[in-house]
Image 1 (spheres, rainbow, N blue to C red):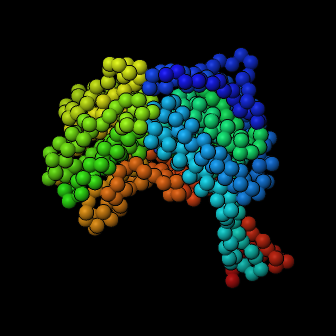
Image 2 (cartoon, helix red, strand yellow):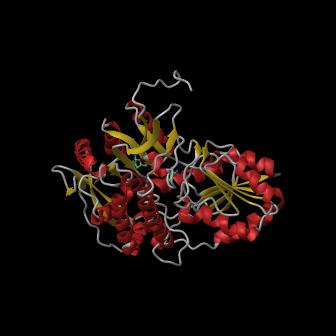
Image 3 (cartoon, rainbow, N blue to C red):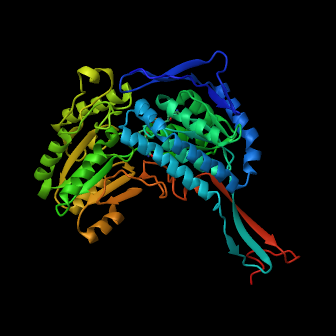
Length: 496
Ligand code: TXE
């Protein structure tokens, strides 16, 4: 079905423009490769113009009272709520996640924008007693300035909003560069903010390749903070490049998320959670379950039930509400996933289910891969490296201690989960699992916007997004000392 595929320019200084001589690119649906939108391939000079506009708009936006900034964000949430179904359908067409998850993506955007709007009334510092007489001490939060938001394709509306809404409420101005294969979702999000009344130049939008537009953003000395979500390799490049300019680089990278199912678990519940965690979004969430660590006592029984349940998943056009798993997001992703399935076979892992590209009929139009389950040994590449597709590696362990050792023995530390009825073991797991997120008796996916999001080890570089800590990413803290003693006082010298 070739739906309407509009063209978008760059949004710079409040004007949508297609600079003379620009090259263009199109996004195509992974369902049927039909065009979804046409975009400008931004160049370094376009990035410079966008940063010019963001710099020029900064004083005015910075001095807008934070609650007034919040009012504009609330309007954006309202507009997005009104357009939820339309934008959800677009997410599903442009990225391929099933429509229920397309709606979830947009709902998460609405929830987060609303949450950040409220933060506009809570951008608080603190008062702290001085060690000296007649001296008043406090801290205040101030915006960072021009912020670059660089986002991936798998949550094409919610991840951009996690960055943009937080950056804006804090008084920053933004240059936003989306993943190229979901640029239309990104453009529609920008249009929502524009309609809500974000002033010209406060939010700028430059599409184009990471190597050109992304790098130009990172290199511009006026961009002080880069908020990046994407793969580890790219994140490392961004971090190193940003370091040259001593910039704050906030990284949200990959995961290799384990779910542990113990022999005392509610196996029906665990089965539902493993299927959703591993094959929801065709496994393309950074928090997707990619390792199932199964207690030996239930291994055969649980694996048999899992293979049977996953074998019944309906794969196809994600716009159809009866479909459980859609296509993977692009030809590149499809090839990367198939390569990893080959690696698994060569390493001696056993394919318990799937393992092939789906062909025939409508499958030939898009990028459809069978949900795949490997029986693997810990240490194989398919148990260590992020595949980012509908591929689950199952590992047998003898007890809880071995389960935790296996779970932690990877370079990533984003999400984790354990199914057990033993409350002591659950609390022990919260302590033991090396991850930024731990779920008890729930899948590794399911973040909520009011809690911090992010991971340890190579999943990031220490920051968190979402929750109230999102404000930390996008504000500077200023310490203030007010001496009303009317004489010179020397801290640490005029000791009391
Ligand atoms: O990432 P890429 P993708 C991770 C997920 C997976 C990846 C998938 O684990 O590994 O993201 O997203 C731009 N300088 N997470 O394939 O290729 C590029 O254009 C500057 C983790 O999009 O790294 C795109 O806009 N920018 C996560 C963005 O970087 C560059 C949640 C990401 O691209 C660039 C979701 C460069 N040199 C996905 N090269 C989490 N942990 O929260 C590319 N880009």
